[in-house]
Picture 1: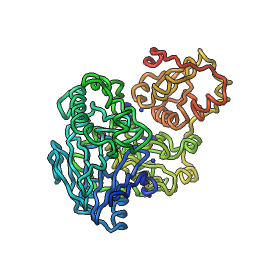
Picture 2: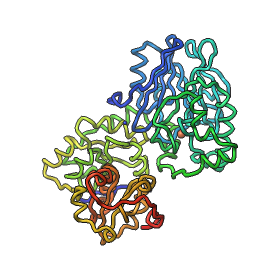
Picture 3: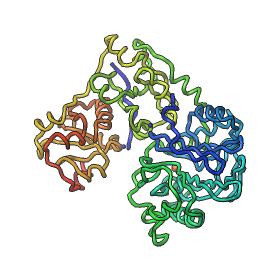
Picture 4: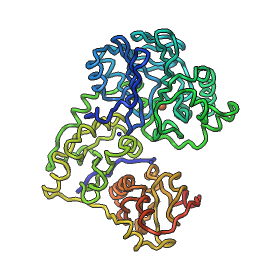
Length: 502
Ligand SMILES: [Fe+2]
């Protein structure tokens, strides 16, 4: 076969409604607050109703769940509040405004290329008996804004804190440096002022509803919980407990990993607009017969993305396809490993999950899905076309084959996972950086490769093979299984040379 090499570059949870689930609801104070949390993106959208009116805060790209919910509740969506120009997902604000007539609201200084209300600091918006007060809180980005919900008596009830205040963390101040013409230290200083002047004076019993939770690349130290009181955050959030501004700036800028490559492109889509989701979904659901699949790939330069589990992928896949499993942090990994959101993509998915796959790709702006392999990989195999496989061994086989200190072992987990414990002598080459370290792989030198459980190492294996590297062996179940079933020597000593060198 002569497929184009995948265009992959640097870097590291419905339809759809089954993946969008209300995690927390609050029906006190004659209002309804619902957090709609999407695990894959660690993202919280919010649906709030009062007296027949509703507001959606930071909606995801596909809007049918919100429309269906509003219809069921017989409420009119009046406003769409955006806390900022999101970098890690494409929001559904534009499609939702078109579908409902609701007004999109951004905070001060936002300059989107579509019709919106640019709110003033302290401006108030009425929704039923509720009031949403705009608190401009620059720092994560210049237009970053929190929405303070007050009941009919004017009591502060909840703070929709966007990426300004997370649980256990605050938004990273480095993403907007270029757009703001500022350093991350300048932005961190602004964030400190926003938190101290706008958030800290609020009452301890105000509920904090952030835009992200643990696992999001928009912060670095988030709690696993997704709702908390402001009083508890005042006590335990490291960023809110720094002695002064300088200490705050130092603390929030320390240890930031490079942002995933797709962040800038998602910001641009959120600012400039995008194709309607229904159009993207329709195109992506074009069924392509096995007999035509290769020709389409050849003529379009499309990357073949196989979204099946690593357990299914390992024993057979369309040559040169890249595996990023749907049952994991699918969208963030796609965004981290595929360099360009405009990359044409052909899908191989489990039959019945094609629409879910296209939807989750569009959440991070990958809208150019040309279609999917009709009948899935089974149809390809049944038709007798070439297949490829990955050489995977069990931890027990690994234990009997490997000569510690002599053989090369590559651990592709994050540096922090590696630092906690790793196989003696293993090199740390995080998956997020594969498009950098792949340049230094010596094709004549065999290596063993593992991650934590097999999800990431299969992605790496597929990328390596698509680039022509085959002289490696991947280990089933990763470090978790290796630790349980083998007696291989381990270390928690971080050898910097090994982390940094090839
Ligand atoms: Fe953000």
